[in-house]
Length: 134
Image (cartoon, rainbow, N blue to C red):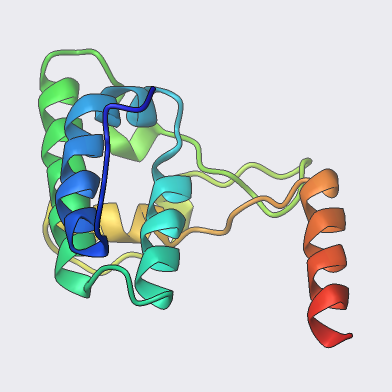
């Protein structure tokens, strides 16, 4: 049973923050931050959360990352390899365009890097698109 029992849409922002508190370390260790951010954006697209909920959850995740880096439980953000568009080419965060400044900007650059679409996911995406057009 899920520990996040919701009875109304208005509880989703708090659930996002609670999810980061409980599963944030696993998201970071398994390099699933971009997946989580896409999920938050989807919630926003469907009108279930506001942009400030995305910001709060991402900042909580960033603070957790900084704490885990300081404790040595994660490599520094600049050393982490990101997902890539093709299987043959690896892109590091140092190669992605960044805005000069704080860790906040580095975090946003990291989550906006290209995302790999696996062949089985591409097939599902194409099937869904064909269903939408019919």
